[in-house]
Length: 262
Image (tube, rainbow, N blue to C red; front, top):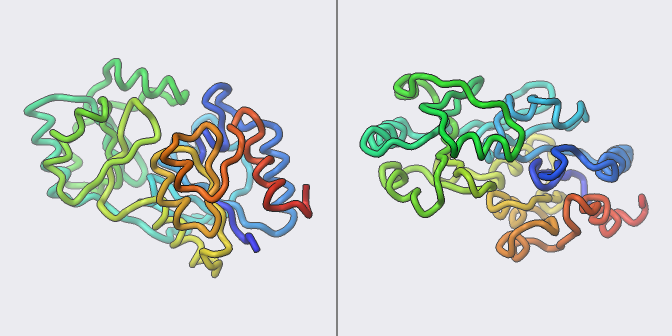
């Protein structure tokens, strides 16, 4: 029996075309929640970027896996899990950025700041309707806890910077930037931590996503669902493939797994 569902946001709950939750998805969420299923978010976004623009429209989720599993908390604000990038890796990256400048965003628990704003940042942020991030002195990251770093460059250019971060790994859900976090961290770790907190076995968990950063989560869940707009790699990791976000993907998946509701 499915007792909990974890949803990616961008491309899963929220359309890249309309930047909103489809009406059919809202109906689907309300219906399964009324039947006692706990609902969670599992995203690469920071809390501030979840709150920005009220993208989730105030829907009462039970908890949040943010920053690809590096910071997880309940709706009540209780922190269940957190994982930080090794300070030596942060220092290594900053040294590489001095050698070969590139736009990056450093993400702390309650704030984020960029070293520069260029066309790569503007393109990436406009694609998901984020406000332009604030500029900041990135050297302060040497003394603060950093949970995630975004690098705004093509994937084939990542290696130069990642080579200086041996305890970190990169994943992507956008072609415009990478999410860098501590090695071993993932949405899978995050959903396992939150499921355990609510005493829900992973066999009773469903996870739904569309991006590369969702693959581990889909494999870890009892049932992994890939959106129709997902890449082939994501679809291969899933137990079930639904339609895309703009063609009622969530409610169509629920019709398959909750026939007694729909």
